[in-house]
Image 1 (tube, rainbow, N blue to C red):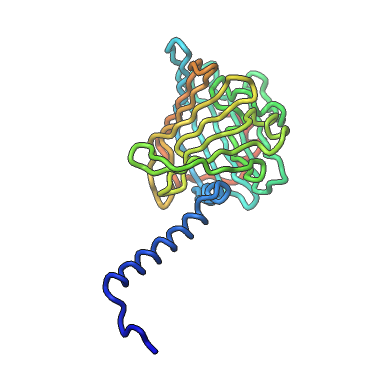
Image 2 (cartoon, one colour):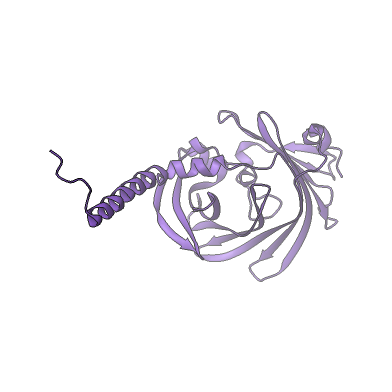
Length: 273
């Protein structure tokens, strides 16, 4: 026997609200594990080709600034993301080059080479050296390659807002000591923008006591379906006090440069500017 030929309006609305809440709860549960959020971050597309100018501003604890200018190229290969950059000025670093082969295979260590024109040859950066400073900046060599998801464990810490944007806070903890030795980090708390799964802030805890690095990406541009950072700020702190800062500013971004595969070889690196 049918008890109702039609549900009362208030019951219909209540059921609809309940179903919507259940769907939202299920979707949130699926999206809000730390690991899955970081998988979405890792899955965001990047341009197959890109060229850009960069200004690297180094700021010491007294506010003194040094500005270095660079030119960078990147290209997607079948097995890796590869990038090449050269310092253009000032004269004491002009011609210094850096080449990265960032492999897709998580079992394969990335390759990095630094070319010093004064020595007229390149040096491969060993894994044990990747936690050291990249050219006197607050970025390390390890920061110049993407992270392997499986080398970290993840915990969702909660949600909040950065400005008007809702973000997830996810703690990434190094899975073992070898990861700490290579990166210099024991853990990172990253702020992932919910609208596009881009990391816009991070707090990195270093292995050395009372040391951490703060990263901020306050400016972005969306072009051809890609989110491109325009400014990156990195602050080194000891005991909560700022000791050094680096700002990278990107300009003249070209997503269709004429770049051949041969640009991303050690032989090309050693040719210099």
